[in-house]
Image 1 (cartoon, rainbow, N blue to C red):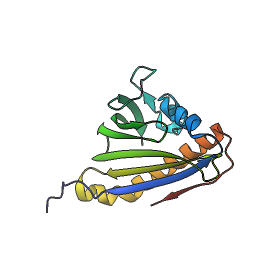
Image 2 (image 1 turned 180 degrees about the vertical axis):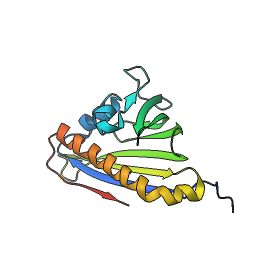
Image 3 (image 1 turned 30 degrees about the vertical axis):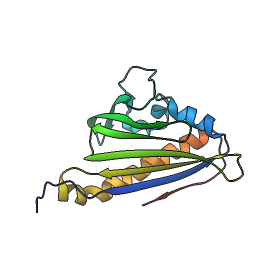
Image 4 (image 1 turned 90 degrees about the vertical axis):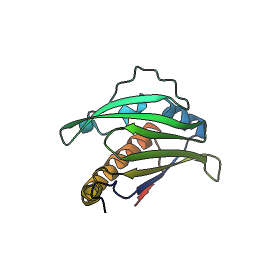
Length: 166
């Protein structure tokens, strides 16, 4: 067995309900600059691609951040753009061996709100070393996505709860 094979695929899912129309919520995510506002400040996340970015299938976005004091460059491509239903961003260069993030927005059953479901399919680099580091990485991802949900909730003054699953 090759010890440098990619670690196994992991999945992170989150769910958040906002008391706002899907078009309004999608418009927030369609503005790439909002990503900085919903990322924990200690990550020093910055979009390197000049704003405004025309969000569409094939759009490329470059970021810079710092994790545990290490500078990281990250490049993603919008693989699917289907307003106001969903979009998918995929890492093409960055810290993961795989990062595919699907954002799905659906109206709530009563039609008065929007459910935001995120699914991230990711693999860590370095094979068995990546697998061994996963618990630490997962804690960080859960914290980042929890912060993100709280910031989105505050932005929309939501009263609904959020959940994350492993």
